Amino acid sequence: MVTGYSNYQIEVKNVKFIADDGRTCPRTAIVTFNNEEGEEIGSELFGAIDINQIYEMIKEGRDIILDNYYIPEFSLSSYRRHNGIDKKELVRFKSFSAKGAFFEARACTDFTYSSFSDGEVTFDSSHFAKGKVLFNGSVFGKGNVIFSNTLFRNGNIEFTGSVFGEGDFMFKNAIVKDGVKDFQDIQFGNGEVSFANTEFNSGELLFINTRFNSGRFNFKITRITGGKVDFHYSVFGDCEIMFERTEFGNSRVDFRTVDFGSGRINFNRSVFGNGEVNFEGASCKSGKIQFKKAEMGSGPKNFNLMEMNDTDISFERTEFGDGDVSFYESKFHVISLKSCHLDHYFDLRISNADVLDVSDTIVRDIVDLEPYDFPVQIKTLDMSGMRLLGKLYIDWRHNKCNEIIVNQEGTTLRQKAEQFRILKENFSGTGKYEDEDEAYIMFKRYEAKSWLTEQREKGGITKVASYVPHGFQWLVFDKIGLYATSPGRVLLSVVIFWVFFGSIFFVIDLSGLGKTVSAVGNPDHMSAFLQSFYHSAITFFTIGYGDVYPMGLSRVISGLEGFMGVFMMSYFTVAFVRKVLR
Image 1 (cartoon, rainbow, N blue to C red):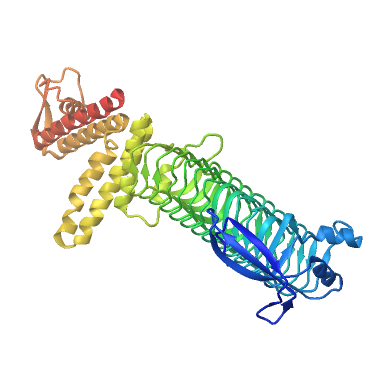
Image 2: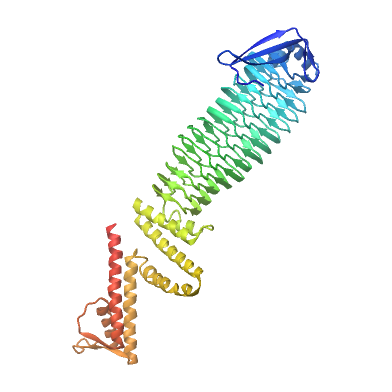
């Protein structure tokens, strides 16, 4: 079939036409096709049938076989007028075939309110060379309906309100020029609905409020130049939905409040241009939605208020282009943005998700996770491998940062530590210093756990020896002062050490292994117990009055306490100054 023509001429000759199946016409239509320069690029022969003959066949209830025929000015509206039939009364076809036919009309080729019996209805490889094509309100019985390889040169086609029975609706490899393609309010039966590899060019492509039942919806490798692609309010059954490698051009793509049913929805490698992409309020009972390696342009991307509690949605390696991206108050089971470049504002204030995967992402702008007017409930957040060049708006307490990282099942201790480090640096940059301290503590704890695990895996003496530095770090750095983030904790530790050493001095005094002695007598009449604690205080704080001095084993303990006092006061100074200077 010649499709890439800009113009054509028709010459009807009184020469018998004989079709491949033996059907004959008394006349032959010769269609010559020309390119933009007027040069002939091909020609085809068709049987020239009188339109009134077709109407008579319809009236008599005969089979309508129009394969390879030239059919001008076909109109069921005209047929109704001539036969006194109501405008919306169905015109019944016993059976129908128009393979490789050539239709043209000044205004429109009109099949409105037609009713096709069970069996295949086909327009395979036909030309609709001039005028609109109308199938509004038509009813198709059980069997396949085929418009594959069909050319619609006018670009304006309407199937509004049509009903299809059990069977496939095939629109594969069709070419539809610029115009309005109206598939609104259609009821499809169980079977495949395929627009695979169809060229829709520019204009409006409308599937508003259309019902797709169980089967398969195939929009794979379909090409749209620009305009509007509108599926909002459509409902899909339990079927596979394929938009893989679909090119939406610079169209406004609208999937608002679409019910995707349950099953697998595939937008992998699809290409969205610079128009708006809108999935607001879309829902899915269960299954998977994939946008892997999809490409989006400069328009806004709206994924707000999606209801997909039991659905996994993946944007792995998707290029979001310019423009903001929003998932505000949406609900998912799992949402993955793994290995994406988040170059513009991302609103990830998701209402509910078991897993949010932003691992291996590169963040150059703002990613917003901080609750505002509703709780953000994310059970697990995976940030392993993130390169944070921008900022995360996230709250340690409201986002339950500790839990959403600790709960990760597929990450190592080292990866968890790295994620806490990312949060620590991010909180420092956004001025949330209390949250920074919390993240820093968890970073150091998981870093220590990771180191211990790695040493234990080496086995032998290394395994045993690793507990010594790990235990020291656990006690001194973590428990005593929370890695210098809590001066209050350090002060409490100071009190504990003073009481501890004071008790030791008193026990040594009782055992006779040593004692504390007053160099000035005992003017205050202190008991051995009080004198032990007094000596502990002046030793710990390195005051050095010299009025009480140690003897025996107490000398050794005093030296150790003096060192601990210097260390703890330095520790407190670091923690306090760290708090004040920020």
